[in-house]
Figure 1 (cartoon, rainbow, N blue to C red):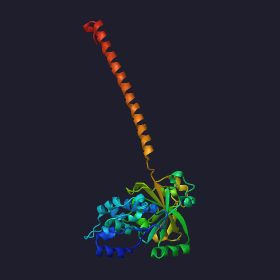
Figure 2 (cartoon, rainbow, N blue to C red; figure 1 turned 30 degrees about the vertical axis):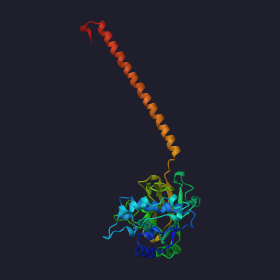
Figure 3 (cartoon, rainbow, N blue to C red; figure 1 turned 60 degrees about the horizontal axis):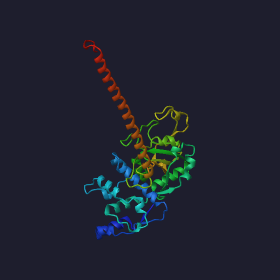
Figure 4 (cartoon, rainbow, N blue to C red; figure 1 turned 90 degrees about the vertical axis):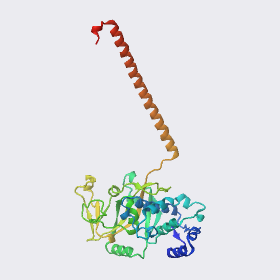
Length: 349
């Protein structure tokens, strides 16, 4: 994605010794070696924003940027959200004059937090993953795809690699709301069954739920509010993870549902569900991003013209109905008047 030219600790020492102007004086912030850094930047900030906007942010915002922790060890969510709103949009960040972008202290700290070395994202062509969704409906074809590049020196990566080498692995999908993906990308999928963080049921017992069917995982992935300054993915996105699952004979169970609340058609699909009891057996390899199409100015103008035309015909119809009603009332009035003139007073009805 992007790497800071200064080490995080070194920058912190500089800021403390030189004051706030030292952070503002950093005119060259990133080394842009990735041609798709703009899309990656949008994705990373969108996932963090999704967690920050959630009513469950106390649990979804993990890890949390230390720069936004107060002296009393409290998380300053409001300050973080305001900082996210002030971050340059992807177009601004990667414009021609990007080397002279000025960031305030909070923005600078947040960008350091986002450039962690544990997991980095790399945009890949959606066509590369087509074999995984080619048989699905067009609505399940992702708009963007990002590969999670894990640090090969991390203990979690090495543990998964060892289990994969021993038992083999298969691909599966995991669906979750956008508020959870910041945590998933940075800390991996976790088994929250039986804890307060569990959001869905445990039809096949405790564990991390995945599926060999994209349509099943997508059913658990709902569109949510992302980053307000996003110019690529858009303000609302949903995410499905394409994962590798170790075929561990004891820690991973492949289940088939006899009956399911999400559609009886799944009952005939073998291995529709996979339940991994250990997070060491699961690694998220790709993020499949689904965006909501932004309405262009031309489309908005057409929609506005159509709305105006419809309202014109509605008003015209109401005018015709009211006119007829008034005519009927007028005819009835003069009929009654004539009727009274012809008949004697005692015969009036």
